[in-house]
Length: 593
Image 1 (spheres, one colour):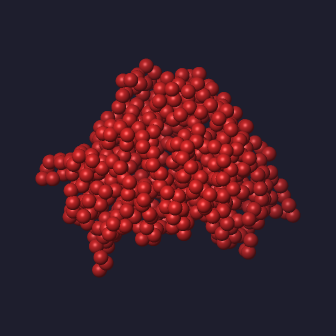
Image 2 (cartoon, rainbow, N blue to C red):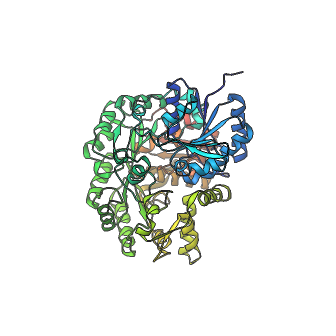
Image 3 (cartoon, rainbow, N blue to C red):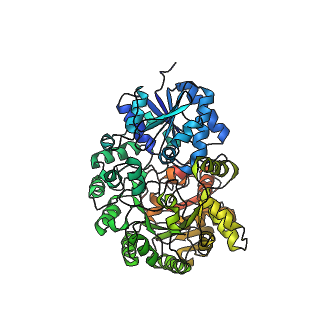
């Protein structure tokens, strides 16, 4: 019999019906921290099958590893029911296992999760040292627990996780039993901690952190990990993945440049979401273009209306103000390198007027037309995290909250996870489309999904999102007809994709045409598409599809499978291909057939 495991980390399911992968990559670092301190730990993911199959997997691991502690991620509120359901299943399987949760949502509802019997203990805020203390049988800081029918707690005394900034990842196959399936398609690399911003809808906003930590300086303190440690993370993870997510640069620190200088040229692909666009400078863009296999920039101006953006920044309830010309300078820099840009925006912000939506529509279209590298302009409504500044001070913002407290958030999460076969954001857009088609009853449905409405104008949220649905997106259709050309060469259908930023959506449309036409042999010229050819198979054809900035058409996966089976003979012309590219003959089995 194998040695008993100290801590089993569990990533709870996000949907009872979908293979929808939402991985909390923080567990990699927490498991490594425990292992570095002599505590055995491993991670399993429950997002790879149906709810019943996932629980069978959970029971198999509990039976095999007999963990003393099961730590279930409580990071995201939309996953709350999955988190609590997993905790309940573990206690039913073996009441002697100590069940623990933590993360933003669990921290907000710590007492409730213990009182209702889902967990024996919940760690609030910083959790590294408290979890180690629990594993050692010690009294743990920041912890709420259930004892003899009553709820007890220790003070919030663990704020500064200095040891975390010095944390080195363990070998990936030591913390995951099946890294190829359970590791995120684009793992998040932890660069540092602390946020100076007070974004009104975020549970990690500065005012929330400082209120919870009870020390004003902690919420805003920005600290980075060393370049050496980040490079070590990349090296260890690169055995399974070669595309990663960086999303931390809230100031003008040079740490990111130090990291990029030292990476091996063209070894990694990068999704990069800077927290403040004012920190994305020309030198950094050039460095990323020269060193990375590809860079996919996810830029967040917060709203496409420049006047609204300025008003929100002036009130310090959004990120620092950037002008349209500042955003365009970044997009121009990126486009020259042939990399990809995605911009994201939010509707139904405070003080937003109908005129702001008109401005937003025009500016989104301008960005799409002006920059060939603009793959998509994403837009979503405000959806409040529990404890976010806008929800805490709802009277100040003139809003009516649609859900308060643990019971209402748990029921919402249960309905979203168990009853709906589509993702949460798909529900939002489907509701807005129904409203745009004349169904006024969708106002209440939309407000229920978002969790609030404006007291003076309850229909603002759905009306403003519905007004944006007519913006053409190349993720839906090619933006200009001349980006894809179709011909017949020596009797074989031939497709050419112009070298531009919309390479992945356009390849998706080519794949759709090939699949729908039933071609048995095709040739595809993607020789100008550096970004496309650099995408790894683990991202495009990942075994556990997930939400990602990179929108991959299902028809691409279908075409790749048809080529692999020999149903389609394909000759694909590309730039030099990395060995793990999804277009590489070893993945497609194409040219030799």
